[in-house]
Image 1: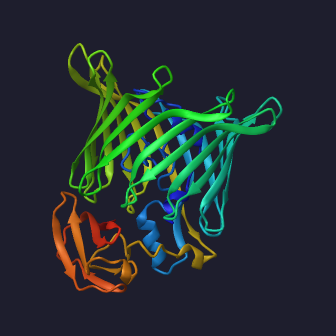
Image 2: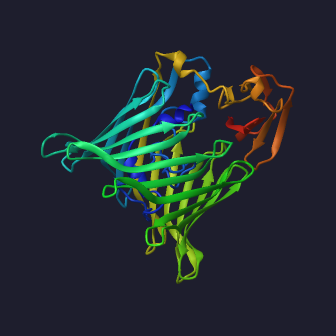
Image 3: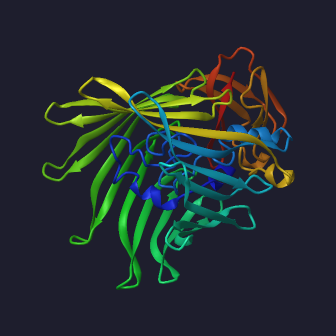
Length: 440
C-alpha cells in the first residue's frame, strides 16, 4: 500500500470541502497540514479523509529515499498557525505536534491554542490504529473539555480497503451517551487504473436504523490520468433521486493543473453557473508556489480577486511557510491574513525492513530528485504489457523512451534532460502505471 495514504488528522473537518467552501479564506481552518489546502492545493485527495496527502512520507519522493536503503526519512513534526495584522506582524494562535512509531507511521497528534495572555489551552488529540498490513484501520478524535479538565471523545473513523490497498469503505461515528453511534458511511469505486470514479455518501437515520443516500460525486479523467471533471449531486428525499449541485472543471498543461472552475447548478434554467476560479503557478521543478482564487460577481459578469495562497518550499520542495492574503477591494491590493509554519526533522526508522517494502505492482526508482540518472525497478515480469519506459514532461510530450528494459536495476540516463517535473510511465496489464520524477 502507498504509505502516503496512511497519514491523517481530523476527519470531521473534511465535510466542509465542496458544499461549504468559505471565501475568503477561513482564518480558523486547519485544513491541509502539509501546507496545501485540500480544496485549493495541488494534490487534493478526492473525498478522502482530510489531511490524507503527504504527512507520513510527504510524496513519492520520500518513499524513494527509503528505497535508497537508508532508514532515514524526513517527517513533519509540528505546525504553527498565525494570524497576520495589516503590517504582517505574526500573532501565534494555535499549534499541533505529531508523533510517529518506529516505522514512520503517524500514530498521534495533539493540538492546542494560545490564549491572549500567552497561556496554552489543549484543543484536540487523535490516536491512530493500524492493521496487520500497516494500513490505517481506525482513529479516534477527542476534544478537550476545559470544564472537567479532561479529554472527551468526539468522533471515530473505521477504514476498510480493497485488494489494491485503496479505500473501499469508511465508517464514521459520533460519540454520544457514552458510546459511539453510526453517523455516516463513505463508499469508494475505482476504475481499472485505480482511479476514483464514484464516491457515495450515506447518512445514518436513527429512526429507521439504516443508512440513506446523501450525495454522490463522479470523476472524469483525461488520457494522462488528470482529473478534469468532478460532479456532485445530493439526494432529494422528495423526489427520491439525485439532484445536481456542484461541478469542478480542471484545465491542465500536460500534467500541471493551471486553472480550476467551480460552478453550481441553477435549477431555474438548468445550467451550470460560475462561482469560483483558481489559478495555479509553479516553480521550475513543477511544484505549486501560488494559488489565486477569484469570485464570480454576477452583476459584473466577471471574476474578481478573492484570496491568494503563497507557498515557500525548502530545497526538497516541502512547504515550510504558507501565507494567505485576502483581496481588499477598497485599496485594490492583497493584504496579509494568515501564516502557517511547517517544521520537519529527519527520523531514523528502527524497523527498516517493513518500511522499505513495496507493492509489487508499482514502479520504484531512486534517487528522486534526480540529476544524471535513475535506477528503476518495474512491477513483476508477468505484470508488464510492454518492455519500455516513457518519460513525459509537464506538457504531456514524450521526451524519451527506453526500450528492452528488465524488471529491476534499469539505469536510465538523464544527462540531457532539462530540470523540472516529469512522469515515468510504463504500460501494464491493468493500465498505464506512472510516477512523478523531479530532475534537478
